[in-house]
Length: 165
Length: 414
Image 1 (tube, each protein chain N blue to C red):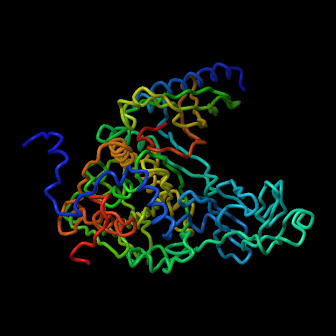
Image 2: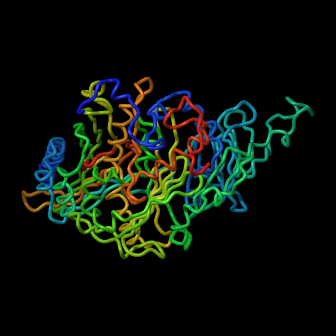
Image 3: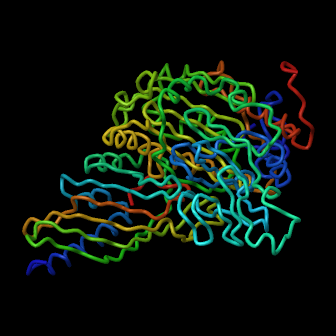
């Protein structure tokens, strides 16, 4: 890690936590503003059932902007998701121009409607478990996401969600 | 009359018999148990795809009507199905969802199915090949030939799906069972080998038939913003629902205008063989299987009923085994952007049916569920569901509209 790597690593941790807050609050534009124009997003999982690596969702920044911009037109499950991330590791390249980070991720869902809102609303359960595997581009003081892979362990996703994780 | 009182609410609908069902068929414990015995244990059920067992000694496990099932590929490359139960003490032989018997296990040697409990071993044809300390325990009273696995009827049919039946006496092939319902897509899925690229599951609180209904009727496209703007046109409304013997339904195709949804594009470049660009077929097989082909990607829904108000749905996505990595990635995007667990449509369907499940829980008051739309058997006609429930009535022996009364053949088909 370069001399100023520790400072960059702290900046990256802060950036990752910022994405959790923005996504928790469905502030998709603010989330994507933290990403470079070349950003790509993926949700992937390995399936022991079919013994294959799978990609549940994926696309460049433009695509993510497009589908999040149309969410209000969809019948979505409004039960809020809360991302609990712990950044396990940040590696800043020696030239201080790129970095990677691994974040352990648990996403909780607090039901709004559930199956029957009278019974279920307010109930919190684990929605999914996985990791963020992030890549960054660094330009001086400016750090932006260039790739986020959400690597899931969970493959039973029941109703799923329209929202990026 | 506007809102109705209890008596009015429960009055018989002003529709013909067969144009509504009693919600009890979605919630009653006794009816559910009858369905497992009279339907699910009697039918052909597709349990997985042959690409999930590519090599000799590969296996997949699953259940049908609570019975543990294992599908294995033998040294002769033939796929066979067995009850996944050791004949010794009734233990489940293999617990993993998939894998290979080519290598040894902690309790057993390679190329055998070994029950970890007492290390009894079986070959890929279900023959018992080793009873540990046999002579000491059984002397000459029991030998390997007495304790083979229970083999189940199985067939590979329709693009490589593996179909299994718990009914040893089933008197139809899968082709006969399908009764022509799969024919419209057969050239497209049989032209070259297919491969599964996607799998996820949902366990949701609703009866399995409600999920099947949702796949059968397209009137619910009002639920989907994507389908409204890429579909609703004259060609869409002319799509035909065609019933086939056995309760199966085929929903005819039309050309989807994917580019009408911002960020989406035509799927023309990767159409399945013999399929015009951007077509969308749906085949609903009795009692709970759906094949859905949107031009470039095939989706299958295989239902496992878990209770009157609980079903597991396994979602698979399939492409051509010959796909280049680039084509496969595009095909996966096409599939998951609509049908993945984070796609535009699937979660909307799942939200809707769990809403039905919540309103039809066991013990709740019976409701009349209307299946009475008539539109010349086109896309928003509910003839597909009517056709399904007629068959359901035959198998269960109950009237779908009055489940406490016996099923009577409709006059026109009696």
